Length: 420
Image (cartoon, rainbow, N blue to C red; front, side):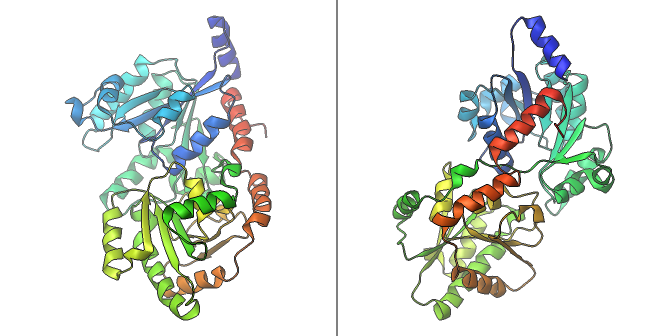
């Protein structure tokens, strides 16, 4: 790949950056998207540039296989659009895959890469549900020197959608569908690429790195956010960050917090507790209805998406994350960077247990047991001002710092292999 890049640069007479195409469903404020944006901000963009291929419904175009330009004309802007363009990247669009448009989707992929042949040396696919469709075409029709399938989740939703996803991913369990196989954790790697490829060493684990310093505890920011929320200093804030869908298990989370409130009346009668939740999603109204049914709406805040989520971690005192499954949740890494004690489900991969701040429990237990653990932890919180630098160093040493990870992945994009 290095020779290929040098040849192209020489022919052009200028030193053009290697262009990498990242394939996502969208570029909203999601975990995988945020991790790539952290890398984007930290790479040498004179040497490497990112472009993004996202998906959007074709209905507004009136066509089954519209072009990228036609979809861009009707697509609603997403969270990271402006940042991508400011950093020098471009955004392209494919029609959203909906099953029934299988052949139209394949046609759109073929047309897209044929029309843009030679534009990207690397195509990095984070959307594994259809990676077996677009990655081979990126190499054959688009001339990509390197294709990457990147697993970022260890499970699928229940029902037909989950079954369809598993079927579409089956080709990823064979060598040759992509040139390289990346994963954020062992669980996610085995779930998408299978035990055989993982055990034979074909799957590379890439930590979900974050900009660690961005989340370091800051008392002034904490006070500012709490003042904006109308939260007093003696009020305890339990936090959660995650989109509102099945995977995040919000119904159970709310039941846990309801039990925390009930137990706190006995064990901490002089303290107020508040749950703040950041995120959006199809189940938000369902969760809000549950909160109202329990009569705890004055103790739960739904804050939506926040571009400055790091400030809200600082305003929290505790982090709760009882997901059904995850690849490697960057939010738990972010919470540790902010010095927060975290209680997570034991279904989540252990690679996220980077510091002593993380505890885990079985989501089959009664919510009252989780509540008891939370109240126990709240009585022994760390001195975040003093301890955050240590947690920051532990995260960096474990490879979860974006600056460190940017150097490693940049080398790969330039050479087609890692230094080690």
